[in-house]
Length: 579
Image (cartoon, rainbow, N blue to C red):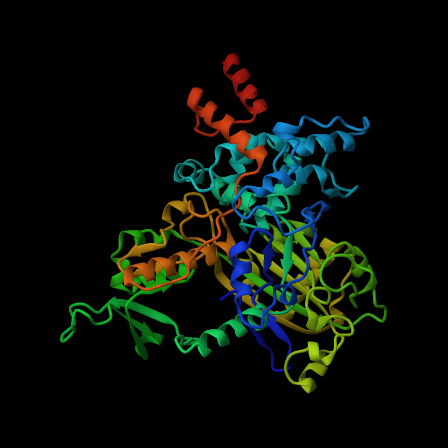
């Protein structure tokens, strides 16, 4: 899958994109901690800030907000860390009439990420005005009204596009939308606002920024996830004697065994056909941990799946294509040190690029950067892997490098840049890896404001993952099945049970995986430790806002079911009076 990794013939590690581990990935962290020989701090970097870039240039540095990991684990402790000025502590008066001081005094009134929008270190060159940033408060009504684990809320907001929610109802300014909202939509749910469900946008922003102070804080793996996490996990499972992992075994059909000649009632319930019938597996239960587009193919060839009510709309699901480009560059003669973020503070990128990334080794970029046609609807991230991965670190010892020493000497000291593109169908269609690498360097150069020459390229690896990421388009949640879709058939993944546990991406996959294991164990009468850590409870500010939203919805339901911002409500009222 997307966490897969391998090494090239020259020993260079490659993987299908870089994956972050956000602070609220509580169940994911617990799963990693249970792997023998794996220590969380040994495989993940410290929490690292990120630089946000729009088509206008650098927007802001998103800081690491929480100072400890003791952010709400489901019992409400995080509320006390999220500001505390509302509703019990009163409003802090600004210390000066400066606009920045006013924003600092207002920020504690708001739940994250609105406080982040006010407090992030914005670039002086950013076209965002204070009015733009304050217009984000128009989203408060929708945030308060939308329940993360409420099916009615998902039904209400899922048919609406995120763009309509932000612009038509919340009244977010064009500046804030283009500079902050759109870039985040293109790299989190990985799609433009018009093609992203409003429910998905609210849920995604809630999980990655709103749940608690510090929810946007993120750690990165200090090497390939396959080698650092999955390989030791697989070894532990196999050594236990009860697991057989068959890599490269493609599931082509799943059928029920009942009714076959000679079958006894106690026989396994299912027969799974692999690789077009070359092999088969008999089993009592099936847990499907695949994406929506793969699920459509499996259901089409499997009567045991395709006949289920939950499978009737799998053909309506879509995927997002991603392209991961890992570029190995000639090291600069100058080692730039004292850099912020990541695990390692030095890099051998060209000095201009290193200086542009002095605050963070991670740049999060929206669409249209550099006026590059291929990036019109494509977001991307840029990573300096010398500061994230131990193996590439400046001065890394042989013990920190994996594989054969002679092979690894081929790239000893090489600067390594990764550029991951999202909604990148056009880029995936480019067959020439060198051409893709040149495009990636153009994109990175535009984002950093520093030239990266393709003459410095030593090697490149391109991974094209077509339709590999769940696409949370409008109305897609209505096609999302529950964890259990039939007798003995279960599902897990980031697109499963959307109105259930308030989590996203890797964390959602881990949560639904544990839920599927628990459901299967219960049905088969087995013992299974499948407890799930609940999602963080709402902050004190958000709880108060939700109470007000429920009262308003009961007393004066919004005409279009979606609460508008006060200025949008006033605008519509004036328009009606003028008619």
